[in-house]
Length: 271
Ligand SMILES: [Zn+2]
Image (tube, rainbow, N blue to C red; front, side, top):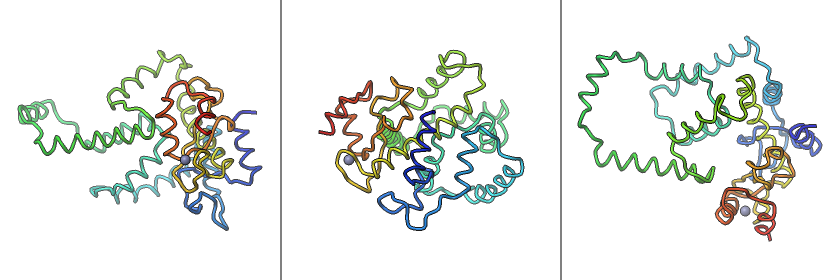
């Protein structure tokens, strides 16, 4: 039995229903399902479809696309509120955009490509121009804020450029995981789902309570007891996860760093 199959069984046996972790519309402030909650059949079907690596039927894809059309045009030319943007970015996590989609988006955003002549003109106009002091400060603030968020979330700061380079270097034949380009996309999707299920099971087992400060209703992180990098076989094992609130989780990594974390460290941290 795979870890994820075990996770699914665990959740079912416990009477927990499988839902998307970052969407809590049916839960109370303690993360418990509200009375009368039903996991939508839609979500369940989506998960199982994705797990099986099955493609959506043409009809369903058309419907989804129809349904999305209005939504996209609503936000067009409107500033997107911060709250909505955060939600959007959260829901995008673990869902890499395909190359084809990215191309489409880029095309839609850029409209027509500029001719070489136009580009030269633009360059001339912009030559010698600098951002104003105010703009530079604003950019700096945005970058700092983004880095802070990255650090909170992932524990490290890497510039976008560096991350792109790293990702490029890791992808393809250079990667030790390279299997000829067949599995990568499905694997990404499956692992994203496996991670969500694992996180959900860990939270459920711990009753949505931080196992260090015993607080309820905090923003929760699932912590890998034996670290993610060194124990790939335990990445989705429920026993290798523990629920910590964001504060305690950050504290743990502040004390013990982010590399080669061990069970011994956690024991020490919890006592
Ligand atoms: Zn805590």
